Image (tube, rainbow, N blue to C red; front, top):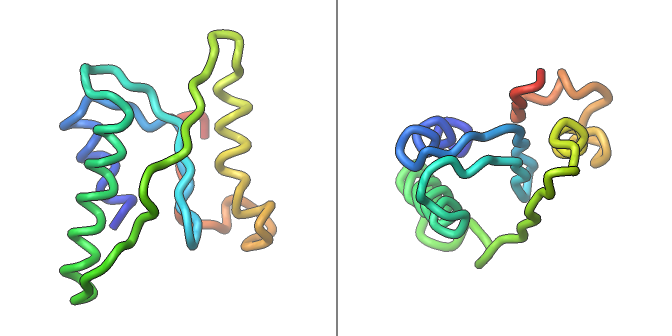
Length: 111
C-alpha cells in the first residue's frame, strides 16, 4: 500500500522519489521537493494516507507510524547516486536477501 501511494504523492505534491526502500519496520527515501510542498507536509500526507488505507484493509485502529521522521538535506557536493545505493542496499545489510534484485519493495531512478 505504501508503494502504490508514492506515485499519487508525486502527482499531487510535485515531489520526485529518487530512491526508496520499504523495510519490514521502516521506510527510507531520497526525494526531491519540486513544488511548494515541504518535507513535513509530504511526510504527513504519506503517513496519513497509508495509515488510513491500512486501517481499512486490516480493520485496524491504531498507530502504524512513529511520530515524526528523520531527515537529512543533501548538499550540492553530495552524490545522490551513492546515497541512493546506500538506501536500496538496506535489505542486503539487514540480511533479508543476498541480492537486491531479490527484494521486491524498492526503486531508484538510477536502476
